[in-house]
Image (cartoon, rainbow, N blue to C red; front, side, top):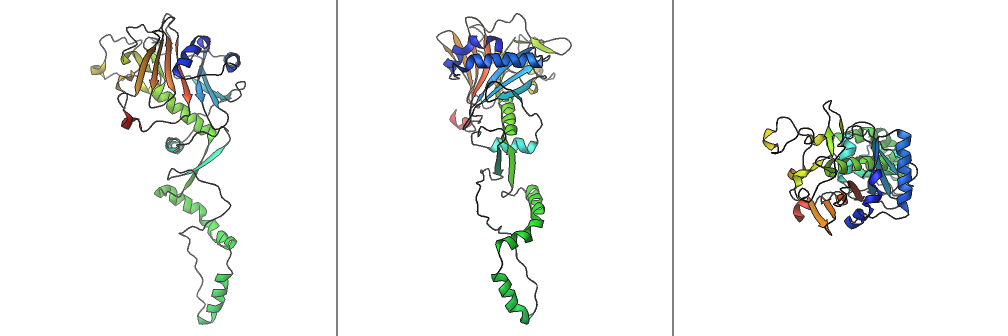
Length: 329
């Protein structure tokens, strides 16, 4: 949602269920304008809010030239100071985030410990001995049997830890290779937040057809005279396009080209073929506010004021994907 039209869509967001505290609106607006000025962005957008167990995250992004490829994301918790969101993470961390089913804690420095069985580990003061640890004693013959028994009875936990400490790294490496469910993995909440935002943005951030314009040099910009979709267009899912670059139309898909194809505005894929079928639900409220919800990511909405044509995307949720949707439709 462009910060310039932020105030105009407050009522539409309330209708869609994405409420923002009234006292926070002027603070967010001023802080976003400051963010745009400090980074010399052409435009800055309020992407959404991710609710946590303590302090919520507000997400924003800005761009200088290309509106799709050059987006830079930020997050804040006090609505005054914006931190740059991480962009470098591994495939393993992405797979970890996909398996998590819990809300974010609300602390970017919090390190979450999970295991391959998709269960959050619990910290404890007790230290159970691994079942695959085997204690071996040298055989000193019959005369040394009594000494061996005495050594076994006097053996403490610290002695066992010292025996197995040297093999910890080898055991963890073998567990990672073999996919052992006992391997514990760590991920910082800041990285989890960035990955979650990226996944939501990839699958649910949409724009109306005609809003973006592709120039002959390949750069993408906002169409200067676009006034939103009219009543005859909002009911057609072909008129809503994924913003992410991975949904750009391949050049060889001639059989999927629409009859009124225009290369300058139809370079992105529409949501009509999204899986599962029926993951988008739209409704017109009071013949004025058009709302389209993404059911796969509850909280993702596209809103448009039909009287003015002002529109925008906003996310307000826990950052959790509804994996049960195929069984609910």
